Image (tube, rainbow, N blue to C red):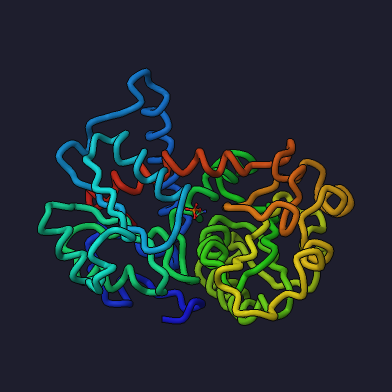
Length: 342
Ligand code: CP
């Protein structure tokens, strides 16, 4: 599977029983609205003195992360506990993966130990689809290679919907810029689907060698959305500069320069990258709508793709994004257990 491929779980041959969340490609606004609503119910649980329910009592949730994570892993673990599930926090680094055990054998082992749900992050695009065929339970994609990060897109949508959404929570009439290293970003590939489905106009921008394929992807997704939803459809376009991306936007998301995925030569220097593509207060003040909100999925390279005063400033939703991960991931785990994922 190439990163810009957008398989529908059913088309890709994964089980179609609504226990898995592999991707957000192809989801429609009504399905996203349901996820936002269930996340709202989970926020209400988190606001009670107990901060938990026992909806998933007796369920074992395993977190299986082959790549580093802070936000996604911890928020899934908090979410599982808040629903009363037992947690198997699998440490790939000290496991038999180091002896060469395959992903499929690891999943079969977790199932034999009683795991009902696997939350999987893997460096290979498509690994969750393989997992869904091998694991006789629920598989939740917590990020696969450059390809997809469905729960990040869902939590980003929940934050934007709450802050700048219309009466129905949709983003119709809103413009969102996503700026930076698109090429290596599973976050942008998933956000494109959810933001367009929510009706937003998305503007993409980044250095020429880090946006390969995105003009075509943006056009294809816009055409699909128009065919599906007519005038209510959102859209996406690749623009040539950060200034064009920021022009009048309601929210701007900076993407991390993924130094661990660069092969060398993609950017001249970090200073040059900040100069040409960095989200700075000066640029936002000059170009964006007044009150433009700022997002970053984290972790951030402050002083490179985003300045520290922007990340920590009044416009910033960075910590709102982190906090929104818990109720959204509770919603995903709850719907997985009920077999009601879209
Ligand atoms: N946004 C995100 O996926 O962060 P982590 O890598 O810390 O989970």
